[in-house]
Image (cartoon, rainbow, N blue to C red; front, side):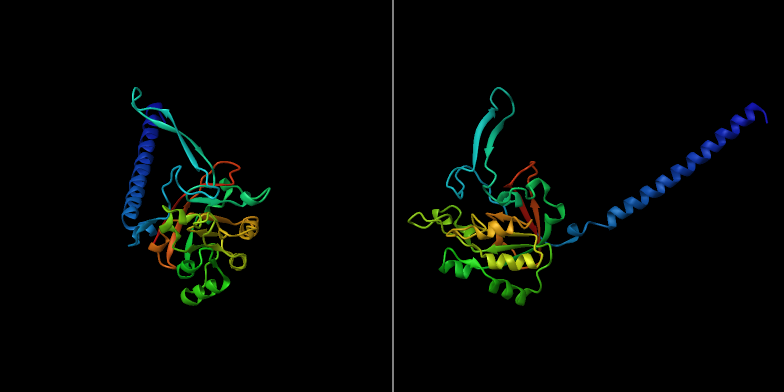
Length: 271
């Protein structure tokens, strides 16, 4: 075969292969495009709504120790620069925030190392507003969990179980943190309840108050048992009263600073 003929054959073969690949790519693109228009993500297909479970906070937001949880310092001012930013000093356990296992253990999981699958999960809400109205240090007890299960069915493994005490409505009042005589007072979980939830393989608990333990707790029994067990908590949740007892999915925007014992988080629910 002559050189010219050989070159022509190679060119013809290359063009045929190029046409084959081009056609295949076009077909694949068409299939993908068709899929994108018909196979929407499950959440996008839901006719539900998003509820923000996060309080906006500043240095005046109530904290457990009474000290400002976040401090602002101008780092760049708009005047003369055309942009602006703050230097922030943030204490981890302020605002709507996470308590990671490392918070109450020497070598527990840090907030940066929480398993991603634990951060998107079913949300179960136990309502204790009635007894919290009678007792500011009311607790979620095993009987409350049993009543919830009786009314709503089993608590899914890996879920987040949150207490709605109605305390979120008090956040702008001194009553959110303490009684008139200055004693800490707010609802929380009992250790008996969290032991039960641990046995059900619940991944996290949440409260609409300053602490997983009630305000009058002297031993922080829930913190010392729940967190070292490898589970985490969320404190100062907002808007739990806007959600049903079951059926919502919680999205926990955990911070990811290394060796963190917790930190402010953006929490959302879809229902």
